[in-house]
Length: 142
Image (tube, rainbow, N blue to C red; front, top):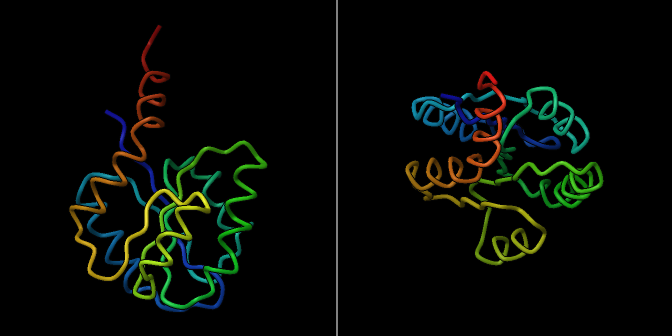
């Protein structure tokens, strides 16, 4: 059975990675394949890393406001390239207004401080399901 493949990265000069590391740990414990894009990503570098890893979901950890600058470009680049990879955002700075604006931008999941691991696992697994299923079918012998 194929696992969901997720990449998690931090954008701009935000150097807070504890949340990203914690999320990576519980996603791995939930049997997902998780790679870490690291710190200091731009939308271009994060997409390059995501495509190289052939991920099902892109996760962005945000603990500063820089994601506001990068997310519109990231979403535009994904759309322009015909890439249908859901993007989720999580972090301590997210407000209800941010959730609304990010959803309007096309972000598939927003997880502010206090989000529960099971909620995040279920949402990410659901978002990855279509791509995981397609990969599983492609791997089946003819």
